Length: 221
Image (cartoon, rainbow, N blue to C red):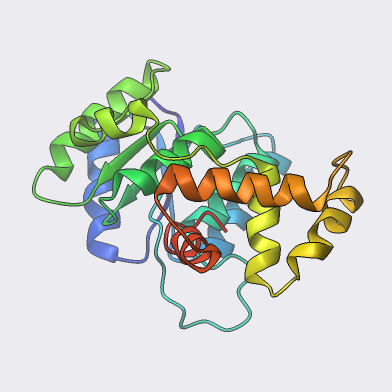
């Protein structure tokens, strides 16, 4: 199964049964963290000591009761973990049961699985762990059509920069300059406007404000 697994989850009861499930399936060592910053530090230490984790299981929402956190949610932890340890297997375990959220994580970070919290989560967790251990991608049945159909827009880094800048109040006419500074060539205002129009059409929005709100709600930006 897995030698070493890190669970990032701020509910103790969830940590306990996930750990029990891992142990029953043959995992040698399981570590737990209640905050994203703590989880990332454990990943760093393990990598530095040449004892890297095989799998990260993380929630998406975490308490905000500790000041000066650098990583505020599971999406930020996943992004940081991918940069630190690109081959780390990642399983999301979240109460968010919207296919669009899962689809974004599969597309942007190539997560290895997504288990929605609910009545069947223990069964789904065992199935997900079994498939991931076999180097397979686990997509829950109720998400498969939505995730694989790709009806929603697949956000590129280019798209994310444009929408993030708009969300921060950057004037649309200044975004080509920002893109050029980040290494994108031959950027023009018309190309930015065209791209925003394509994204809005794909998602059924008429205004950039709707697009920004959608991206914030789905942790795309």
